[in-house]
Length: 192
Image 1: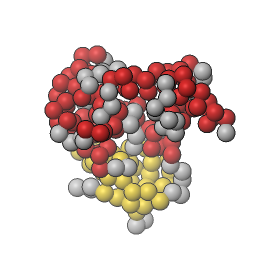
Image 2 (image 1 turned 60 degrees about the vertical axis):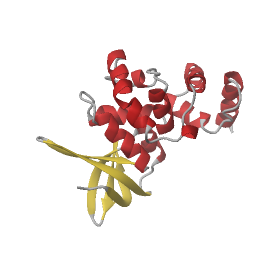
Image 3 (image 1 turned 90 degrees about the vertical axis):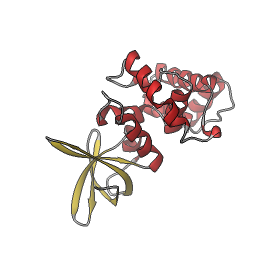
Protein backbone atom coordinates (compact mmCIF):
# COMPACT_ATOMS: atom_id res chain seq x y z
CA UNK A 1 0.00 0.00 0.00
CA UNK A 2 1.37 3.40 -0.97
CA UNK A 3 0.88 5.84 1.94
CA UNK A 4 3.29 8.66 1.05
CA UNK A 5 5.25 9.67 -2.02
CA UNK A 6 7.73 12.44 -2.85
CA UNK A 7 9.05 13.48 -6.23
CA UNK A 8 8.86 16.01 -9.09
CA UNK A 9 5.82 16.96 -11.11
CA UNK A 10 6.30 15.86 -14.73
CA UNK A 11 2.82 16.50 -16.11
CA UNK A 12 -0.45 18.20 -15.15
CA UNK A 13 -3.79 16.91 -16.38
CA UNK A 14 -7.31 18.18 -15.83
CA UNK A 15 -7.65 16.57 -12.40
CA UNK A 16 -4.35 14.78 -11.85
CA UNK A 17 -0.58 15.12 -11.94
CA UNK A 18 2.15 12.69 -12.90
CA UNK A 19 4.76 12.61 -10.17
CA UNK A 20 8.17 11.10 -10.96
CA UNK A 21 9.82 9.18 -8.16
CA UNK A 22 13.01 7.19 -8.89
CA UNK A 23 12.29 7.04 -12.61
CA UNK A 24 8.66 5.92 -12.21
CA UNK A 25 5.74 8.22 -13.04
CA UNK A 26 2.70 7.91 -10.77
CA UNK A 27 -0.66 9.31 -11.89
CA UNK A 28 -2.12 10.96 -8.80
CA UNK A 29 -5.57 12.54 -8.62
CA UNK A 30 -5.51 15.64 -6.41
CA UNK A 31 -7.95 18.36 -5.25
CA UNK A 32 -8.51 21.19 -7.73
CA UNK A 33 -7.20 23.88 -5.37
CA UNK A 34 -3.87 22.05 -5.03
CA UNK A 35 -3.71 21.40 -8.78
CA UNK A 36 -3.95 25.16 -9.46
CA UNK A 37 -0.93 25.86 -7.21
CA UNK A 38 1.37 23.22 -8.70
CA UNK A 39 3.70 23.85 -11.64
CA UNK A 40 5.56 21.31 -13.76
CA UNK A 41 8.99 20.72 -12.23
CA UNK A 42 7.88 21.43 -8.64
CA UNK A 43 9.13 19.07 -5.95
CA UNK A 44 6.06 17.76 -4.15
CA UNK A 45 5.10 15.28 -1.50
CA UNK A 46 1.68 13.71 -1.07
CA UNK A 47 -0.14 11.74 1.59
CA UNK A 48 -1.72 8.95 -0.44
CA UNK A 49 -4.86 6.92 -0.65
CA UNK A 50 -4.57 3.87 -2.89
CA UNK A 51 -8.02 2.95 -4.23
CA UNK A 52 -8.37 -0.58 -5.58
CA UNK A 53 -11.33 -1.78 -7.65
CA UNK A 54 -11.59 -4.87 -9.80
CA UNK A 55 -11.07 -2.78 -12.95
CA UNK A 56 -8.72 -0.02 -11.71
CA UNK A 57 -5.96 0.94 -9.31
CA UNK A 58 -5.97 4.68 -8.61
CA UNK A 59 -3.87 6.96 -6.43
CA UNK A 60 -5.29 10.03 -4.68
CA UNK A 61 -2.86 12.53 -3.19
CA UNK A 62 -3.24 15.24 -0.55
CA UNK A 63 -0.99 17.96 0.78
CA UNK A 64 -1.76 17.17 4.43
CA UNK A 65 -2.64 14.14 6.51
CA UNK A 66 -5.76 16.03 7.66
CA UNK A 67 -7.05 16.24 4.06
CA UNK A 68 -6.37 12.53 3.60
CA UNK A 69 -8.26 11.66 6.80
CA UNK A 70 -11.31 13.69 5.72
CA UNK A 71 -11.20 12.12 2.25
CA UNK A 72 -11.15 8.63 3.76
CA UNK A 73 -14.07 9.51 6.03
CA UNK A 74 -16.04 10.77 3.03
CA UNK A 75 -15.47 7.68 0.91
CA UNK A 76 -16.42 5.43 3.81
CA UNK A 77 -20.02 6.54 3.19
CA UNK A 78 -21.97 4.29 0.86
CA UNK A 79 -22.57 6.10 -2.43
CA UNK A 80 -19.55 8.41 -2.13
CA UNK A 81 -16.74 7.34 -4.40
CA UNK A 82 -13.22 8.72 -4.54
CA UNK A 83 -13.99 11.18 -7.37
CA UNK A 84 -16.88 12.66 -5.39
CA UNK A 85 -14.74 12.74 -2.23
CA UNK A 86 -12.08 14.61 -4.17
CA UNK A 87 -14.79 16.96 -5.43
CA UNK A 88 -15.76 17.82 -1.87
CA UNK A 89 -12.15 18.69 -1.02
CA UNK A 90 -11.99 20.83 -4.17
CA UNK A 91 -14.87 23.16 -3.23
CA UNK A 92 -13.61 24.32 0.17
CA UNK A 93 -10.82 24.14 2.71
CA UNK A 94 -10.77 21.18 5.10
CA UNK A 95 -11.64 23.39 8.08
CA UNK A 96 -14.65 24.83 6.26
CA UNK A 97 -15.91 21.38 5.30
CA UNK A 98 -15.53 20.15 8.87
CA UNK A 99 -17.29 23.27 10.17
CA UNK A 100 -20.14 22.75 7.71
CA UNK A 101 -20.55 19.14 8.84
CA UNK A 102 -20.52 20.01 12.54
CA UNK A 103 -22.89 22.97 12.01
CA UNK A 104 -25.14 20.76 9.85
CA UNK A 105 -24.82 23.21 6.95
CA UNK A 106 -25.23 21.28 3.69
CA UNK A 107 -24.64 24.26 1.38
CA UNK A 108 -20.93 23.55 0.76
CA UNK A 109 -21.55 19.86 0.11
CA UNK A 110 -24.37 20.57 -2.38
CA UNK A 111 -21.93 22.53 -4.56
CA UNK A 112 -20.23 19.27 -5.52
CA UNK A 113 -21.38 17.61 -8.71
CA UNK A 114 -23.21 14.41 -7.83
CA UNK A 115 -24.21 15.47 -4.31
CA UNK A 116 -27.81 16.53 -3.89
CA UNK A 117 -29.66 17.64 -0.79
CA UNK A 118 -30.37 14.09 0.44
CA UNK A 119 -26.77 12.92 0.00
CA UNK A 120 -25.45 16.08 1.70
CA UNK A 121 -27.72 15.46 4.68
CA UNK A 122 -26.56 11.83 4.80
CA UNK A 123 -22.89 12.91 4.80
CA UNK A 124 -23.59 15.27 7.69
CA UNK A 125 -25.51 12.61 9.62
CA UNK A 126 -22.83 9.95 9.19
CA UNK A 127 -19.77 12.16 9.74
CA UNK A 128 -20.85 14.65 12.39
CA UNK A 129 -19.61 12.60 15.36
CA UNK A 130 -16.51 11.35 13.53
CA UNK A 131 -15.44 14.85 12.48
CA UNK A 132 -16.18 16.28 15.93
CA UNK A 133 -13.74 13.75 17.37
CA UNK A 134 -10.82 14.86 15.18
CA UNK A 135 -11.07 18.66 15.35
CA UNK A 136 -10.22 21.17 18.01
CA UNK A 137 -12.77 23.72 19.20
CA UNK A 138 -10.77 26.58 17.63
CA UNK A 139 -10.90 24.89 14.22
CA UNK A 140 -14.67 25.16 13.87
CA UNK A 141 -16.35 28.20 12.32
CA UNK A 142 -19.85 29.25 13.29
CA UNK A 143 -22.72 29.11 10.78
CA UNK A 144 -22.51 32.91 10.49
CA UNK A 145 -18.80 32.80 9.60
CA UNK A 146 -19.42 30.02 7.07
CA UNK A 147 -22.24 32.03 5.48
CA UNK A 148 -20.08 35.15 5.31
CA UNK A 149 -17.31 33.27 3.46
CA UNK A 150 -19.80 31.78 1.00
CA UNK A 151 -21.47 35.17 0.42
CA UNK A 152 -18.13 36.88 -0.23
CA UNK A 153 -17.12 34.14 -2.71
CA UNK A 154 -20.50 34.40 -4.45
CA UNK A 155 -20.08 38.19 -4.72
CA UNK A 156 -16.68 37.82 -6.40
CA UNK A 157 -18.05 35.14 -8.75
CA UNK A 158 -20.90 37.51 -9.67
CA UNK A 159 -18.24 40.10 -10.55
CA UNK A 160 -16.75 37.65 -13.05
CA UNK A 161 -13.97 35.93 -11.09
CA UNK A 162 -13.54 32.16 -11.03
CA UNK A 163 -14.73 30.48 -7.82
CA UNK A 164 -11.24 29.04 -7.15
CA UNK A 165 -9.62 32.47 -7.62
CA UNK A 166 -12.22 34.07 -5.34
CA UNK A 167 -11.60 31.49 -2.62
CA UNK A 168 -7.83 31.89 -2.93
CA UNK A 169 -7.97 35.70 -2.68
CA UNK A 170 -10.42 35.67 0.26
CA UNK A 171 -7.92 33.60 2.26
CA UNK A 172 -5.63 36.63 2.11
CA UNK A 173 -8.26 39.05 3.48
CA UNK A 174 -9.03 39.95 7.08
CA UNK A 175 -11.82 37.58 8.16
CA UNK A 176 -12.92 40.02 10.91
CA UNK A 177 -14.26 42.48 8.30
CA UNK A 178 -17.89 42.42 7.17
CA UNK A 179 -18.72 40.89 3.78
CA UNK A 180 -18.65 44.17 1.81
CA UNK A 181 -15.27 45.17 3.23
CA UNK A 182 -13.80 41.71 2.58
CA UNK A 183 -14.94 41.88 -1.04
CA UNK A 184 -13.38 45.35 -1.40
CA UNK A 185 -10.14 44.10 0.14
CA UNK A 186 -10.18 41.07 -2.16
CA UNK A 187 -10.61 43.33 -5.20
CA UNK A 188 -7.64 45.43 -4.06
CA UNK A 189 -5.53 42.26 -3.74
CA UNK A 190 -6.55 41.11 -7.23
CA UNK A 191 -5.57 44.47 -8.76
CA UNK A 192 -2.09 44.39 -7.17
